[in-house]
Length: 87
Image (cartoon, rainbow, N blue to C red; front, side):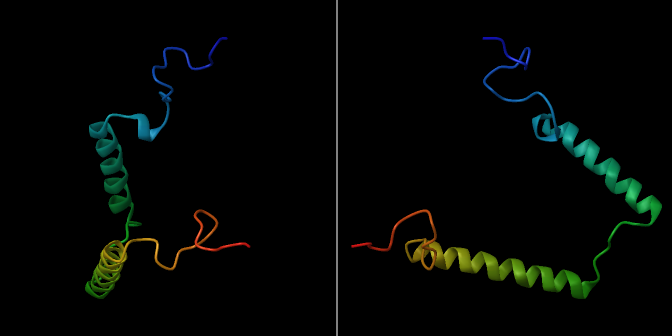
């Protein structure tokens, strides 16, 4: 059977940002950042915004650690993984 991805090894696509070399990704991202600053549309955090972002990140991190220490999955009995008995 013929494949549409010629020269493709291991089922990975040769297309897109994620398939690029990490160094090339950084180059492209930095070009975008420089362009946004030159244009004046880049967002620059105020000290209050940075403080709030750090607080939220710290809270999420500590919640993840607590969850891991308590056996994980606490409070998360959605569609993937039992917990309930249907007798």
